[in-house]
Length: 123
Image 1 (tube, helix red, strand yellow):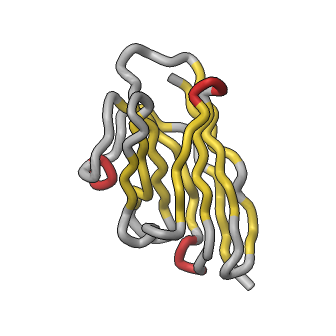
Image 2 (spheres, helix red, strand yellow; image 1 turned 90 degrees about the horizontal axis):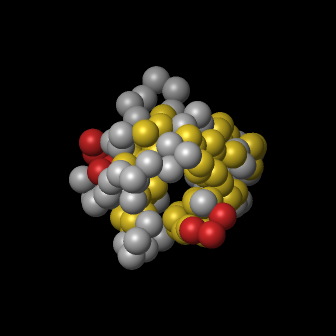
Image 3 (spheres, helix red, strand yellow; image 1 turned 90 degrees about the vertical axis):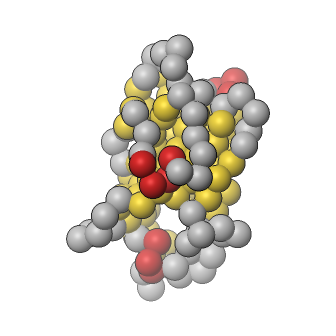
């Protein structure tokens, strides 16, 4: 499977951005999409993931209530709506895919990875 994240940019604190993840060349073992981020000098952090089949979603505590993951299965595109952005949300955001996802996925990562998109939250 190939994944490509887009939609990053510079936004002021309190602002919003929507990231997109376009997926192609699906394999039979991909049923979940996730978003991860890595800030400069920090470890990778799982942000959210969604099951393709039933739409179950999981979020990191740091983004719960501010971020929303969604899907458009017909377009093979997944989204991360980010609201009330904070400077600490600044990072490279990447989408990933695997057979399934759970809250543990946010800690362990996923099998397939795409290139990321930079989000900068700054005044």
